[in-house]
Length: 244
Image (cartoon, rainbow, N blue to C red; front, side, top):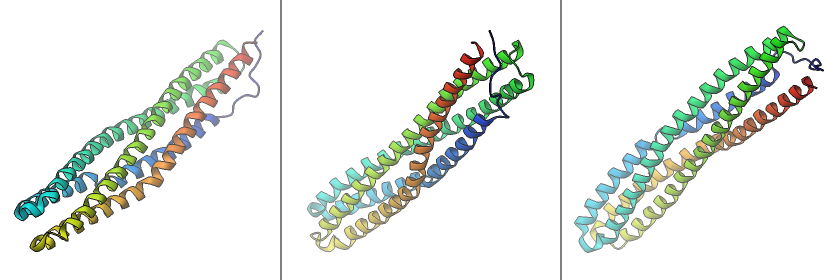
């Protein structure tokens, strides 16, 4: 025998929670992407610096041999930054697409949940609305899984930038060491090393600005995914009660 759902749901408690947390998650993602907005410009500056350093190394002859090798490593890091930037651009598009899907799904779920409250009881209309809400919640959980995965990828990209920073700092140090033995070319090599360190510092500031937002986004993404799963489990419990 069918029995009424008890207690009856009020307004949209589950969708309200998801909407609030999704808004916070999107805000953190936006801050992280904004922090890396000048990554391509820094990569281009490093590329130009490596070309100038290679020219200086050529003028230094044998004393510039090690610096020439270091500039080649620098260009590899520049290529890595360009790749990370491209991946982040694609990730930004995916993240905002997931956000749009979440907002649209919330609108549908709100309508279905209100329909259940309006028709009330356990009649055919209520069961149809409840099933529609359940299907929308399942789609929402899939979307939240995708959003959490995108945030995890963002965290990996931020870590990749950290690795480039560490390697670039090491290259700058080695160029400074080579400058000490470069004779008349010392000043030119030191300028290269100092400029690279300045770019490295800019990258560090970028990471520091983004790291907190990325960490919060990762925490929010996982919490939001769990909320969706818990809501779906709760909904299944309601449906089992209704079908007893």
